[in-house]
Length: 214
Image 1 (cartoon, rainbow, N blue to C red):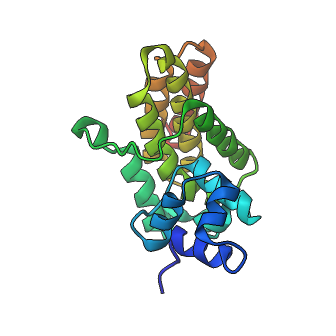
Image 2 (cartoon, rainbow, N blue to C red):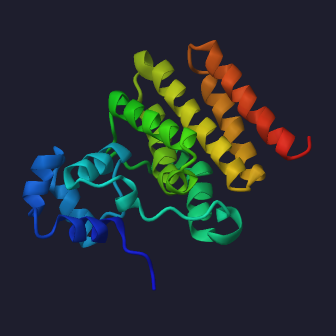
């Protein structure tokens, strides 16, 4: 039996309290997003949008993303790890196939990154594993779309996402993929204006290399 989709979870949680329109108003999101999610025409939305829907429904974001899974995901949850790998190594930006729909602005994306850090420090790695594919996709999209004046901020946020990914992957037992994420963290940090972000990226890479015995 397959897990319910995000749209199916939203539909189950909103009934009978909300109509789709009422939920959209309460969450301050487009009713079209909720409709497409529930109909399966969209599989996900931005982390900020999902967080708003969850708050309107009075549940934690985990209720939409799915129940946390054990921290043995690298060995036992191939679907979730594959989703992280695909997002981390995506070539959509090279092919010009980034989906700009529901792309958060940098202020909203910053909130999502802060939320991800909160999950990391709370050791909620199962929920992070469910959240990272979308967060990684958004990191690529916001840096790709950023104006020159916003590039440093976008790169800083992307570097944080890659650092969170690298450190989380170590806890999930995949140091090899963590190495890819740490290298991406350093690449993004080099485009940001905060030298401490570069130091944080080097620290993450150091953790990966230690885990790899290098």
